[in-house]
Structures are given as structure tokens and as C-alpha cells.
Image (tube, rainbow, N blue to C red):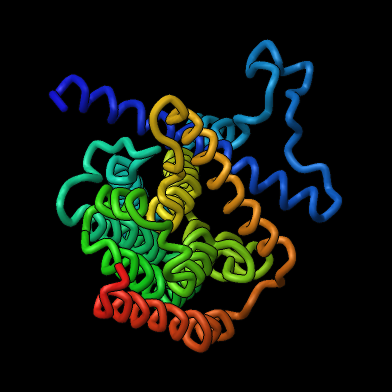
Amino acid sequence: MNLATQLAVAVGVFLVAVALGNTLDYWNRKLYARMQSRLGPLFVMYRELRSLLGSSRLLQPLYDVAKLWGKQTIVPESARKGLFKASPILALLAASAAVLLTPVCGLSVLGCLDFSLIALIYLLTVVSFSWILGAAASSSPWGAIGGRREAELFLGYEVPLVVSLFSAAILARSESLCGLLNFQRRFLPIILLNPFAAFAMFFAILGKLHLKPFDIPDAEVEIVAGPFTEYSGKLLAVIYFTRMFLFYLLPAVFVDAFLSGGLFFTGILYPLNILVYLGLCFLLMFLLSAIHTAMPRYRIDQGFKFYLKYVWPVAFVGLALSIALVYMGVV
């Protein structure tokens, strides 16, 4: 692709990330409320606000970001101000770079580069590390507790996340995200070849998104907002925007790595892949939301033990299965 085409694809992928991240975040809130017999965010905007915000509340996550952007940012006097301010920005930059690496229906700006999968893993790790650093720099006891919980939970979910993605890479014999897609289009979706790796990544996503039973770092009834307690105004808006990106990124990476990126049709039927891609992302979010609704919150020791006792072994079984399938020449 020439430079103009690459820029057009980059802008398109970024806009898809914003739109789909907003919609999946809304979908999660709506499902969580309805499954608990609550109304949740309405789809139709209140009549008094329609002239200002339009007729739909589908953009509620973006409204939240816009509201916070217009509020005052307060930095605690005792905080390490430079690190406190830089952490949310660094997390947003890492998430934005990860968006450019993640293919959307096979289209990607940087996803076809060698080692793009490794770069994606590093960038997703930077997001979590940035939030831990921001919590440590806040000088808040609630932030310190939330940051410690985030660090402990990070050890639990990051290992199966990395191992499951490397299991897919071993099967595809590629460390490129486009390589994963090309392998699955030629052969089979990796979820059929290695369901253990897909299972491990699914539960890693629950922890990465702080969904129940792993919403331990920012448990409202216990530690206010955990790592984000002292954040307000524009900095909190940046955190909300980053989390919205994660609601797009993690389901999208799962679909690309294990479900062929939704690319099941060719030729004249190729546009149907867009609907399949969206359907798979929404189905995955439905399953995540169902668990989020049905499960109570774990204690941090329970959450880490769950990963260590169940998810880690499944992830390493998936890794061994991938190695065995390649060694035996099945793939």
C-alpha cells in the first residue's frame, strides 16, 4: 500500500476502534443492567437533551468522556505530579498503538509487520503497568491498595494471555497478526485446533477488563475506585477513553487470533465478513457480560488462586498441544 492508502486505513481502523469500543462498552452496561432486571442506559435520549446530544444514548460512554473532559482536573498536593499525569497518557498512547496493530476484517496498518503480535502483547502490558504506576504516584491509600491489587491480578491474567497468543502463533508459524489470519483462512479457525488456548485467553480478558469476578482492583464498595481514585477531569477522561479502547481491542484480538478474524467468505460475498466480525465481537462481549453479571467479586487472593489453579494449567496445556500438533505435522 502507498502512503495515502496506509493513512486512510489507519484513520478507518482508528474510527472503527472508537465506534466499536463505545458500542461494546454500551452493550456491556446494557446487558449487565438487563440481566439484573434494571433499566440500564436508555437507547433513546431524554427529550430535553435531544437538541444538544441527538436522539440516541448509544454514545453514552463517549458522553461520559466528554463530560469529564469539561471538568476541572485536580492533582493531589502530595502526589508525584509528573508520573501521576503521565501514566494515563502513556496508557492511552499504548492502547492507540495497539489499535493500529489489530486487523479489522483483515485490514491493518501495522498488523502485517513481522513480530506485530509481540509488539501488541507489549503494548497491552504497558496499559496495565501505566495504571499501576499512576496509582503508586497518587499518594492515596485507596490508590495504593488498588495498584497493589492490579499488580497481583496482572500476574494472574497476563501469563495465560501471553501463553495463549503464543500457542496460536506456534500453530500459524508466524508472529504476525496477519500471519494468524492467513493460516486460519487456509486451514481452520485456531479455536477448533486448540480450544484450551482460547479458553485461557477468554478468562484473561475478564481480568484485563476488570469484569466480575475479577473487578477487584477498582471495587467501588471497598476502595472507592482503586487505582483511579484520585483522578478527575481530563485525566479521568483519558482513563475512560483507554478502557473504551480495551473493550474493542481484547475481543478483536480474540476474534483475530482464534476465530479467523471473521473472514469466512471470499469473492462477491466478502462484505458479509464485516457482519460476521461484528457478530463475533458482540457474541464474545455477551458471554463476558453474562459472567460479569452472574459472578460475585473474588477477593484478590481468590482471584489469583483461580488463575494459578485453573487458567494457567489450561494455558500451558494449550501451549503443549500447539507444539504437539506442529511436531506431528498435523498443521
